[in-house]
Length: 74
Image 1: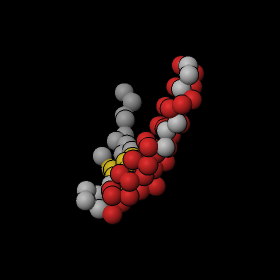
Image 2 (image 1 turned 135 degrees about the horizontal axis):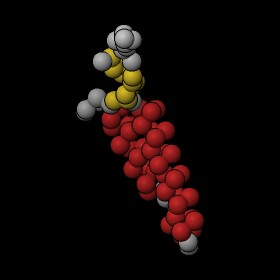
Image 3 (image 1 turned 135 degrees about the vertical axis):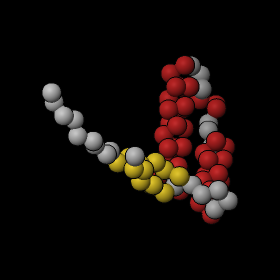
């Protein structure tokens, strides 16, 4: 028999408090990013994919800039 020790893995999540200054800033920055999309250049599927990838990256950056990292222990 081999005994298996219990192992606790620390993990993290990012969170923004509802009705906070950070939430307001997050929403404003996301709206600005959406309004800034240049649709004149979406002439083919490559350009569309490039634009959506860039937008997703921008959203991720905005989220991390305005959220707090919270440690979750199970």
